[in-house]
Length: 217
Image (cartoon, rainbow, N blue to C red; front, side, top):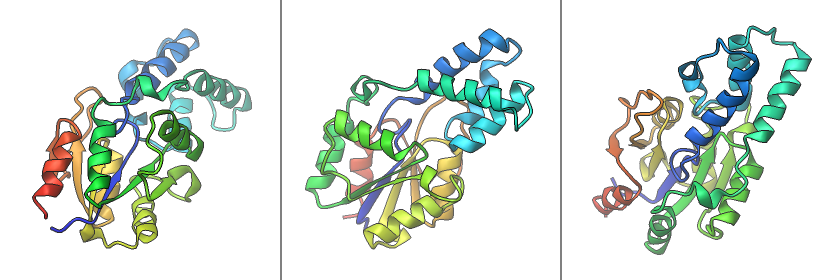
């Protein structure tokens, strides 16, 4: 494999944000809905916004068209937002991205987070200029595990699936990468019971990505 591009999910891959969101959302939900268990929220990790809303609405025992609950949930998400992404940036992220960029790889972010949040993370963490493409799943008709976000990214970079290494963590993200036809490296995370069995590689941190692409040169 001669990789030309490395495509990254954001949450749980570049930044350690998954637990941040989960804990804050759970802490607020359980006040009014004490029957919701923390582990019941694990499937929301890596989910798109609409799918997460549907799941949480069901767990809370509400109807899908309950406008009051939807507004309540919107407020919970706003209160759970990360104000300073530098606090959750994995320590090796900037160094690894810079090394890949300097070696001529095209880099991209393909995340289920909003475009505004992705841009804010890039700006706050000093990653400007490193990514050739940034795509939010919220701007697409279908989110992960649908492969469209990765296919759109490949199209933007003008690369083939076999030219790409995708770095993911969640079950949905890994499935999306494989359905897009690329090889996938899964960042290990035992906190959320992800199924990472479909990944081609398993890594402990992003420094191992350098080793994986180094094997292809």
